[in-house]
Image (cartoon, rainbow, N blue to C red; front, side, top):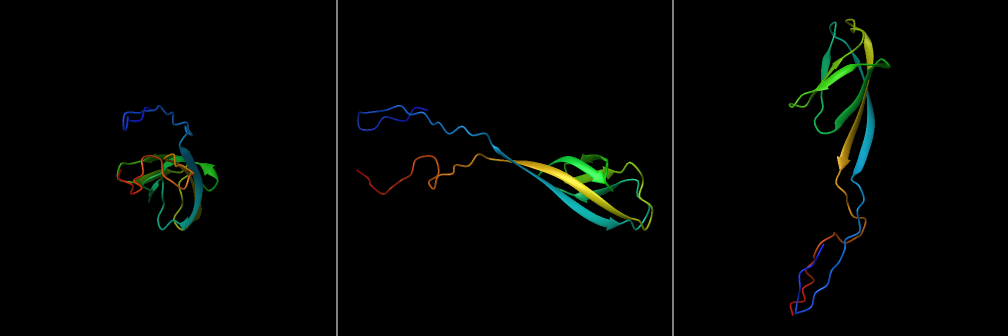
Length: 113
């Protein structure tokens, strides 16, 4: 990165903070009861990327929609009245943030020479 020249003098600087973006991973567990027989069902989920889905401890097929739905198809259909447990694994990449107390970039300090 080359910085602009001020007052007839200039300098080159290299910004060396090249840490990769941070990725957060999480898993949530939901419990429910089927009010009707279900060979598939959907949950509202907008934002993170889904990495895995299990229903009653067994991996399930799943897809996401642009409208923010996670559509889950369990390996075995859920009977009416049955209790079930859904585990959803997700990940989300976060932008690289500086750990310094000052944000990167130029900061106006009030001195206007």
